[in-house]
Amino acid sequence: MLAERLAEARRQTDSLFDILKAEALYERPVAERHRIVFYLGHLEAFDWNLMGDRPVHAEFDKLFAFGIDPLGEGLPTDQPRDWPAIEEIRNYRRTIRAAVDETEATDQLWNVAIEHRLMHAETLAYLLHQLPSENKLAQPQAEVPAREGKPGMVRVPAGSVILGRSEGFGWDNEFHEHEVQVAEFEIDRYKVSNGDYLKFIREGGYQEKSLWAEDAWEWKQGIVRPVFWKSEQIYRTMFEEIPLPLDWPVYVSHAEASAYAKWIGKALPTEVEWQRAAEGAGVGNAGFRRWDPVAVTADPGMVGNGWEWTSTLFKPFPGFAAFPFYPGYSANFFDDRHYVMKGGSARTAECLLRPSFRNWFQPHYQYVYSGFRCVTR
Ligand code: AVJ
Ligand code: FE
Image 1 (cartoon, rainbow, N blue to C red):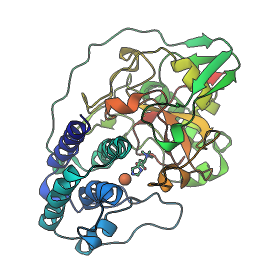
Image 2 (cartoon, rainbow, N blue to C red):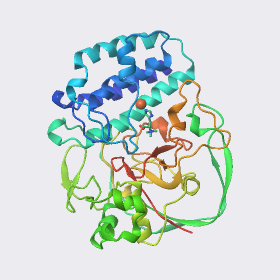
Image 3 (spheres, rainbow, N blue to C red):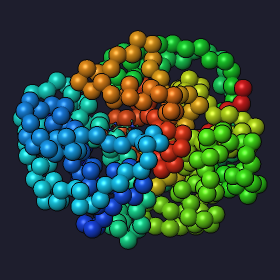
Image 4 (tube, rainbow, N blue to C red):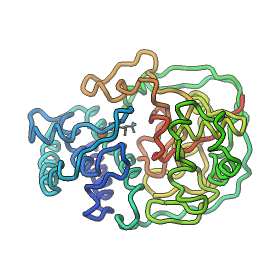
């Protein structure tokens, strides 16, 4: 069962590399992240560092061990020639896969390997998204029927909400289950759309200093619109440029989401509020069926069609304990520089849509499939 799930996850990540034209593998689509070639070796190096009992290729095990989460230390300067040839990496992958398939790791380790790989299926999609279309082979995607909906806000009564989990597989940051009280609030029925956000831009939101946190203002010098927009008319999907879809969710950084919320006189939800509002809501556009979002009104629940930023800094739940075999997975990011994102996007694997799953990124990272909705209290 777990072996079959890992095989399926491998097919998923392999098919992502297959949409790339060969010459693009050494590109670095996002200046502060690794070149794509790193990810080609990373998934296997990770699996082997996790499950292996002997070095298979000590140099590669190390070279491909860690991604980058930049914290103002300057941009990486490595060159394509600093990386191994693709054939060498492919050989390494074959060797590791065969070795992993022979290991007798615990279910927990298999789950870590599977979910780590599936998370990278999404983080890799973010990177590939930023490559020019000429570098990619366009893929089909499921159609989604349009649905009418009236934007507005929904009242959520005061009450309690369960965060976290105490059973089954989850990452270290999901433990343990605990109950939290929430005061009454109202939350947007739908995610903020490109059309909503266009109004913010047209009314000078990017020029209004008082809407932006100090470091956000500094960060956004030169930035006048979401990175997914080529202009106020043209949107960049994974494979093409299309007229700005006004009814799709806007994908922005936490800093941009916060400025919009302030402009409209609302706020981002806390993680607890988000969780409370999402209780019992259905799952929408997720699980690799599409590459692109769908209209905010076409997507039923809060999970899917884009992650959502919360105003909550990523911190441990009470009683947190890191996995001894992967101490840095969450703990390296409890630094008051990462915000919790909830929900999921079109490129989020099914198994990661569970309510306890927590995602996080820095507030200035603009390349994620993450939008937001607002609350009033
Ligand atoms: C949980 C998505 C923020 O991609 O940076 C992958 C997951 N950690 N390899 C990330 C992760 C190590 C992580 N996120
Ligand atoms: Fe990783």
